[in-house]
Length: 343
Image (cartoon, rainbow, N blue to C red; front, side):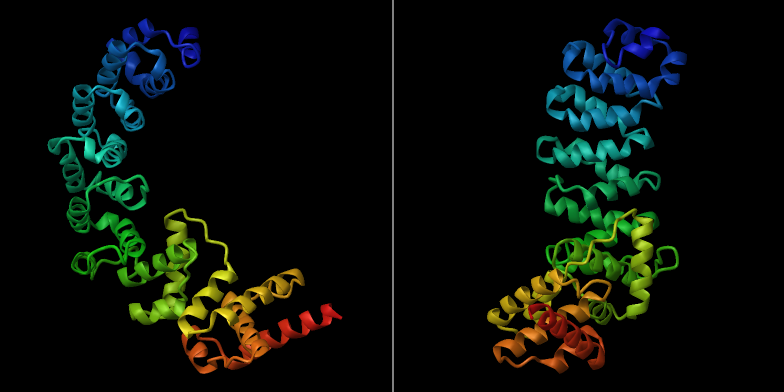
């Protein structure tokens, strides 16, 4: 027991090999033993390390940890060994995420028969969601575009990966070929994600992704494109955040000003003036606690007023979906506060 408690800091290689041979002990401490291998990876002789990885890859409780070792230390493991490891680990559902990660990270360096493990895992109801998550959220993903599209279409057939497919469609909307994008959406027309339509889910994720990238789209704009109500998308957005464990992106009025200026054809001069007004308004704390759409519109309106440029009021109201009284109210509040503080 004392040796086990100590070896994560100072690994006893012979003890690890001995424990790996004992099924009863190895299964009980499998996860800890695998973590010890990961922690001491560079200090274990390669031949012993390979033997340990192969032995623990067969242990139910160690497989997940070993899969992540393979993903993280991919280049340090001989090709023959890692190929054998990936095939072994692919048989264990708990290791699916690590296997998918290892293949996605190193796609170009992996032979085709190993790459095809992604499709094998995608066909399994128990592991499809883990593959989908890697494809959707892994920024280091190096999967070939054609393979990725084929994989996405395969995954879209599964009921339990709608969140991830919706995320991919939203995040890669302009990068996905139109036929692939449409087919992905058509494969899930009647599938509701916990009572939410796929259109509202995609709309909600587009709302999240575009805000996160600093290119926000309004709920009104998304509602119009998705043919779902603003209210439905707003409710689904809250559900998406909770279900996908996402943190809401902090609203950035600067992004809204850039968006509205581009959409409404506002001049660069007016846009720059609007950004100056925004900084003044921040200084005087006049913008907090109010919807960013109204604040951004009011600031652009005030900027146009300052430089003598016409503000396309009607187009703005139609685009953003706020009332004229709200626009004027925000405009007057900001203008009077700045004027008052300037005295």
